[in-house]
Each structure stands twice: as C-alpha cells, then as structure tokens.
Image 1 (spheres, one colour):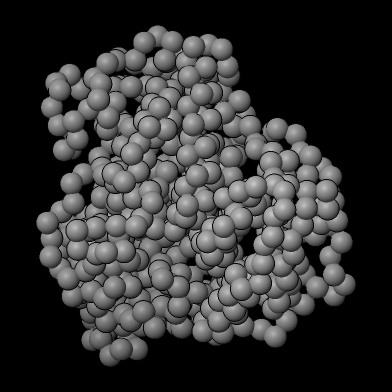
Image 2 (cartoon, rainbow, N blue to C red; image 1 turned 180 degrees about the horizontal axis):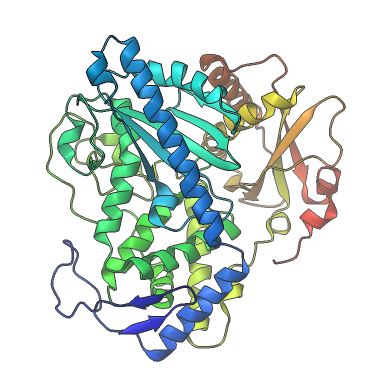
Length: 503
C-alpha cells in the first residue's frame, strides 16, 4: 500500500494478524480508506501552512552544528584525559559521544525548536568537569551565545545557542573506560553503578529510542504527533513545568494510539487520539509496554509500593527502566483544562472525518481573556536585562505550586494558567518585567470573598528560596501579584491580545 506524501513516498506495512504488537493488543487492524488518505494529505498541507517544516538547508545546518559540538566535546575529553594523567597513548584515543533525544531525535522538530542533546563520557570524566571546564571551553567559542548552566536542576543542564541553534545539553558518565562510537543506550545494564543524576540524564535518550521501537509505522506516528503537538501548543496546554503535558507525554499518548490502530493513516490516528483519551479512565495509567522487571535499585513508578504514586492524576508511564510518570506535575485544574480541550478536539475531528469541518479549526487559539471574569496577575521584575531569563525561569517553575494552593480555596473551582508570558503595556520605570495570567473559575460569581495572602506569600517565598538555594538570586529580583477583573485587563495588556483573533 502506498501513500504519496507532500514530502516523500511512504509505504505502509500492514499488520494482518490480531496478535500482540510489542505486547499491546490492537483495537483495530482495519486498513485506511481512501478518504483517510485524502484527509492525511490535507492535514499535511495544513501543517505546512504553519511553517513547521525546515528546508533541506536548515536541516543540514542543524547536523553541522551537532557535528561541530561533537568534535568540540571530543577534543575536550582528550584534554581532560591528559590532565587526569591518563597515559598519553591512551588519552589521545579517548572518546565520548553526543546523542540527541526529544523532538529532533523523533523527527518532529519544528523550525524554531531547540535540540536536546546528551554528552556521554567515559568514567574518568566527572560531572563537575562538565560544569566547569567544558563550560569554560564553550565560553571561548565565538559561535556560542546565551550560555547558562543550571547544575542544581533535577536534570542538570547547560543551555546555549550555537550558530543560532538553541541547545539543551545534558551530561552522563558511564562506567566504561571508553565510549564506543556505536554505543547503544537502550541496554539497561549500562545503568549499573551510575548515580541518579546520570540515570536521569540518560533517561531522555533511552525513552526516545524505546518509543521509536514501539510504534508500528514511524511516518504515520510522526505526522500525527506533529499535528497533536501543534494543537496542544495552539490550545495553550503544552507545558510540563506549568502542570500541563510536555513533549514526551504527548509523544507517548500518540504512540499509544499508533499501537492500538497499527494500520491507520495519520488522520485516523489524530481522530482516534481524541476519541480514546476523551473517554480514558484516568485512574488507569497509559503504558506503551509492561514495565521491565529490573532491580538495579532505582526508584520506579509503582502505586503498589509508593504511596505518592497513587495520587497522580494522569499517569503516563515512560517505557524504559527506571519507569517514571511523565505527568507528575498535573494538578486538578490542569487536568480539567486538558480534558476539556481533548473533548473539544474530539468534536472537531469527528466533524472533519465526516467532511463537515477543516483541519484549521482544530488549531484555532482559545479566547483565554474572554473566558474568565477574575484573574491573578504575576509580575516578575528585574533591574538588569541579563537577570530576566533566569528569574523568569525560576518564577515559572513555582507557578504550579501556587495553582495547587489556589485549588484548596473553596471559592475557586479551577485556576487556569496561561502558559505565555507577557510584557506589561505600562512597564515600571527602570524595570524589565514579565507577566503571567491565571484565570479563576469561581464556584459562584456573587458575594465571593477570597483571601489569597497566604497562598501568594508562599509562592513568592518559594521562588526566592529556589533562587537563593541555586546561587542565582540577585537583589533586583522581585514578584508582585494582583487580583484583576476582566474589565481591568487593558491596564496590563494591549487590546489586540485581550481580543485577539482566532488564528
């Protein structure tokens, strides 16, 4: 069976026997109908209009950037080996390897996407070397801009731009004397004798590679995933840090549908995505495969053993050991919003399949500022521009804790965070400011009394404590919060944002 894509010819392998595919029993083995192929072609055309795809030259540039960084890393490892008194004959041969994961590795990255990369080094290279000596090496490169290290993060990362390509670079050392150029990270035994930070750093690559092994048709999967990721971003529910779903969670949900409908075209996968998850009983976890029975001493998601795992609201479990819930940040409010959006998606895709709607309707932006009568505005301020990026990241990372506390207020039914940050229409003189808006759906509209002093002060204290504890706090870092009614929004935002068009 062939389907001529806008971008390439694609052959669909047909799974004809109702057997377990990678341990998953399909819901349907039906092959696509002609209109499903037509809808898939139209979906791809619509995705093209959003400027998602890179040109061949842009793709080549990304590969060139990765090659340059890989070469730079190898030269650094050789240099470090000499400094650690490795015999010269061996030091000159020391190797490392740069792996990619996330959207780039999956083949679904967009023009403006960053690259997630992992540097794997031999056992004599320490994490402290990476966050000191390698950072200094990067600083010397004229192509490197916006360099910042976040060593205290749950997954320590170095962020920088290389020739206008943004990268998030992790580090892990294996318990080997050398890293072979063909070293696979899928073998669970490479985790032996590693610390938790190395295991967490390796997890992105291991999960990405496992997902690619678990989907029946990679082209069908990639096109459907690009559509779902665009939908989630347009509908403003794409942010792990704010308690929505991040890229890896959306990826696993799409992969699950590909397993359940292995012969379906991408248009069917998108429709079945909304159909399936609009009805999903969320006490039941989404699994791409049964968890491996491995005992290397690392903590895994298991509600039978870990009490806290029983309270996760939308468990989506990574397919590689140590298995983790990728949605532990989801709150009652974000779960409600995600479910509402999935149900909307189901209604629209049902109409698309029937020929009564077009794909662009699925990607219309929500009218967030028309949806609520009450808002909480968070204003993060710094005096120096170079402090803004760090402070914004710290403030944003604590918003989900504020949401959890707001949900405890009897007057608040839903606290809906807009994942975008905004610039005030009238910024304070001498300050660089960013704003986030939380829409409040109240249990009743009249005679509402709310005292949010405790919740707000706890949020501010948590953000400042995080900055101090990470040695990132500066005296000019401030947070102000305000309760704003819908009619007062024009004091903070231009009218084109408050009353923006659908697209």
